[in-house]
Image (cartoon, rainbow, N blue to C red; front, side, top):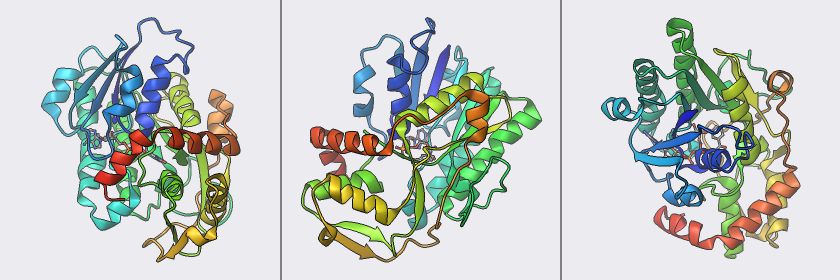
Length: 329
Ligand code: NAD
């Protein structure tokens, strides 16, 4: 299979590429496997994330925007599948200014869908988020839940989900959508909570905790997420949505406690800052469908995953220091 991975230089996309070429997703069973990363290299795209596969003859990289239909028509022929990660992905940035989110997440996804159909792509996997469901006080969202996004980021992701599903209904594109919870792990851009807290605390700096810290998130190790994505790509039913969760719900306050402990710091390093506008209170995914249909189960215990992540940031200062300096974090 020849797969084009959009956004493959980002946090999750690069894990997918490293795992796929490393034989961790299909035991290296696909002898015809080839991977093209198609990425604009925005502030969060980083070729260093792909250094471990840079010399693999099955890998190639194209710098391009998913809004560039002409370039897509040059690159796509010969590919069987698209795994679509490319997006503007940071909620706080979408609150500061939403237009890039609409341009990439909505318009870019439609441009990619049109290019997929023109170029005879036989499978399209769209990576989305649990944030499209909004916020839930009790219980968990199944895939049938109505979409009620609250931030410009999640609204733009919801728009892209609906466009992908409509391409299936209207044009019979063989498409699947996955919606995951909050990812964590290595190569995570240090503007996001876990890597930002780890790297700040390692340097003896303070960390900002939104509001009362009572917002609850489900944490999913990035290696579990990409396994779920590959299962959905290879075995999921066309036109279906699959939730992918990690089974570890906790409040931001509890997460902060664990991060302080892991980094040898205390609450004196925490600044309580004004809550994010429109901050969703709780996310919770029901993952029965992907578990029953595709045999997915998260494998990484949060305790282990967090310890490995802290260790990785300790050992890879050369990766994150320039990113923090450039983004003035
Ligand atoms: P990321 O910001 O680390 O990576 C995004 C990548 O997309 C970058 O490499 C960037 O250069 C590229 N990109 C951005 N705009 C582009 C464009 N117009 N054309 C081509 N490439 C472009 O994001 P991530 O955390 O790896 O997220 C990947 C996907 O997973 C996104 O679709 C996001 O919505 C979704 N998701 C992420 C999380 C999470 O916890 N990180 C949770 C749920 C869903």
